[in-house]
Image (cartoon, rainbow, N blue to C red; front, side, top):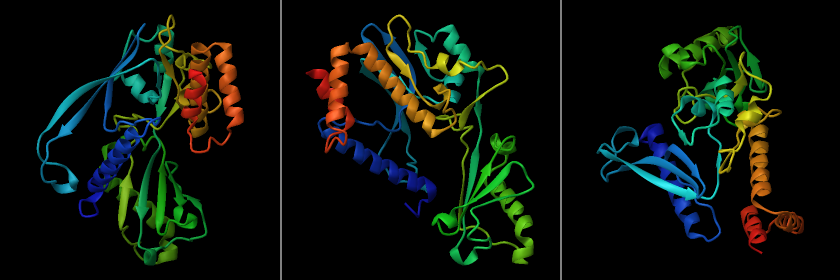
Length: 317
């Protein structure tokens, strides 16, 4: 993996992920996670939900530069059926229209999505050799005169020789069309200006670096949601409405659907819990809800079971 560069590492992680998924799929009561799928359509009807996706099936053969199989791949389609679905697509993906909903989302829900902004917050991660550390190791954060760049010193948190440059708009949007190498050089130039009096010489080159591009990644198309000038206060509520309204099959979660926790992991987690409560309330009568509450009260730690196991047993009694 190291020889193949970052592509090789990604491939190795992907292979390990597939092994983990296959292991989970063989274990009864466990949830399978499918990797490397691109959802193209979510279709809801009285029978349930059908999720259509596509994935590339690589032919066997030697790996080329970066750990990528040089032989041609086949684009295959597959469908997955369920009674209900929870959609956590980022707001940037929802705005793009890359995923089709059938029937279409309501006018109010689509309008709320279109009014909501999708922001860009990227990072440049620099790893220096421990002997080349040139900054105060105990200082956790430091700023510069460029308002688009802030630095986090991960060396102070145990990540030896690692600095993270937080990149904010407008530079964070596509980095002005610059390559990863040029973005890295700009960050190093800022560091050179900041620490030239301490180093007295040119700062060393990093051993490795990573540039994130969440705003152009097709699976995110942004880093977080934000209220645009056209946004309305209750747009997150409109975005979270179950779909279709006359027979809900698709429920929505994600930080963009949270009023109090937007842009935060907290909002994403709480919105997921809210979606589960909506499903339970819609699909269960009061007797089943009481059984679920009692099951969770009796087994707060679940032992070897997952929350899904406890929930499934309570619903089938």
